[in-house]
Image (tube, rainbow, N blue to C red):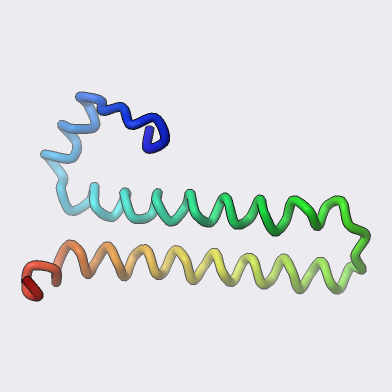
Amino acid sequence: MILFGKKFAFLQKFINKFPKLSVYLYFIGFVGYILLVFNLLVLGPTEFISLSEVAQKYIAWGVETINIVGVLLALILATRSVFFEKKWK
């Protein structure tokens, strides 16, 4: 829905009913898109390159670490936006 720019009535009702939760879902979804593209760019070529098992484990571990940090960053940014943004303005 982000890619096509459409607005749906049921989503607008959800946003109006649960504004804080919708901010968290937005940030998690936005970071999720970025991480999906990153995973495809990194892990896609590694399937076609002959790497040792140890190298594949290190690449997978590094990508998983970046994914965890990305989700934590999304939660921190959403919390800042929901609870602390009004204090800074």
